Image (cartoon, rainbow, N blue to C red):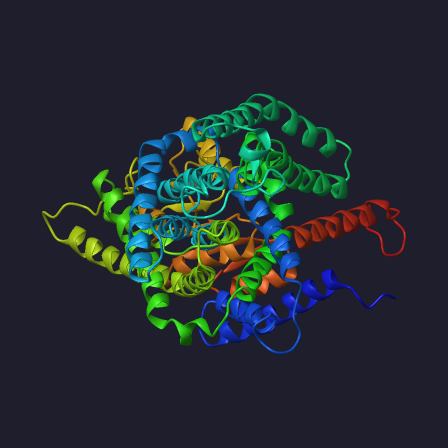
Length: 582
């Protein structure tokens, strides 16, 4: 067996150390991300001991970014993307401009040129895809209004950074660096002999437009058809392979042929597949790989970190960190409020963008290679990224606490005579039902339960995360709330305090457990019936407060045993010993 195996070593040591330190961080009530980042520092080139392959780990992390954006695209549609363009486009551009100006101010105090300040500021202006989406998914916010604005904002930033990476080489001389040679990576303008920056910009915009057009016109038909064809083969293995091939293949092809980022290509691949009924299964099949490679992303970030920068340039690191966490996110908050969105939406967007990541590293490395930026700029960007990623979960924790406090204030105000009720999520008012049944999920199991309650004339409502499915439920005359089942605002609208029974038909035990735990805390007397997919999840859901938990496997086994007992009784000869005489 060969022992020179950098790929296996990077994956094995990276994931193993990330697991141990992530577990330790969790025990200390810290976000597991902190453990993942420290694992990267320990196997990086700036600390003694084992050193993982840095280039390879970054490529593995890029796979996680692709799968993550593919999964987000599966829950998005073109309509969702266009619905937030009025805030996402000007908001992202305004926030990028504000962060860039702040970065130029800091660079001027460090004695850098204006060109270096411009590139440095741009590198601080773009949020990390992995960190942003991980925070939204943990709080089940991706499909809410706030989540859609954040993802739309992220897509605009992504496109802007693609244009920046293309334009930087031909502008290097003007910005105080050296010109990129035709054969160098990203020296696209020089290689094509384009005479002006405007020609380069026009050419890049045209390529992005062609890519988007192909995905929405051709990909919209071919990708769903392909997965439907594979699904009809009956092979689960081939279906999972097809999903991964589509996600990674489109992402790589978009980068190689159109100059679009891997993340943007994967997002559009997921978005065109979102219209297929197989999108839910595709999302489930990519989830384990997505989580594993997302961990490798944080490990790869930690490997870039040189701890000595905290000693050598503490004030510069502090200034970089404040621009990311306070300046950039503060600008985002003001912009969202300027567009007349609620304070809650503004705070969510602000917290989501208070960090930087993968595009920042790519941009600062390119700027350094073109001699626009001094070498210490990379250390400042990486230090700012790690510190902001560590602080970001704490910002969301504070946001969650503020949300809970606001809910208590609003509920208390609503309880006073003559006071108006607490405001609901836009488009949906809180239910007026009491003594009702809450059915969470309207899939195969949930739709059967809802249909039975409707036939019986029971008072009930449905919660469904898929907006298209929720609209179909409403067309059937049933009250339905659309959104992520774990979102605090949505749960408040269901009047869990006055409900009689909660029925969770969600197959994911962690998502179901969140709803059950919240319902039991809000209404200790509520009757909770849940669905489980394994023996372990039965015990887990009961420990969180479920009264009855039904497992499909156990119910099938009991039905089979009942059928076998009936067959045995029917086959027993009449009048024989042990039988029953006529």
